[in-house]
Length: 96
Image 1 (cartoon, rainbow, N blue to C red):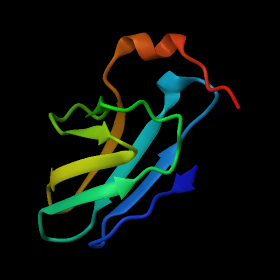
Image 2 (image 1 turned 30 degrees about the vertical axis):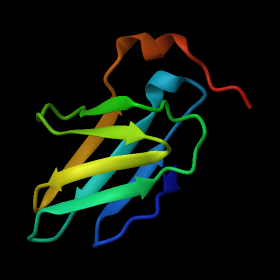
Image 3 (image 1 turned 90 degrees about the vertical axis):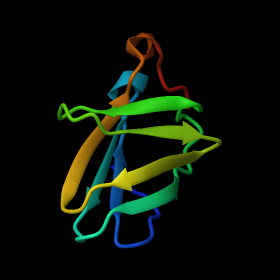
């Protein structure tokens, strides 16, 4: 688990294992405002241009672009567990 740099009172962390499809990003907005943020992932193993979707079933999603998680319109008092949308990710492994 690794806490990510975030601004505007947004709490964000990532959890990863050796399997690419087990990548998880958690976003928590404890405020009463809608937040927008570009979060530096600082991990070369994040797939770029990948859509991350909410594992909890909401329609919320975010995009990974050039090493940043583009998180827009994060509703107030909300939390999301984001995972890669592409099922093909399960065939990839992290190589260190």
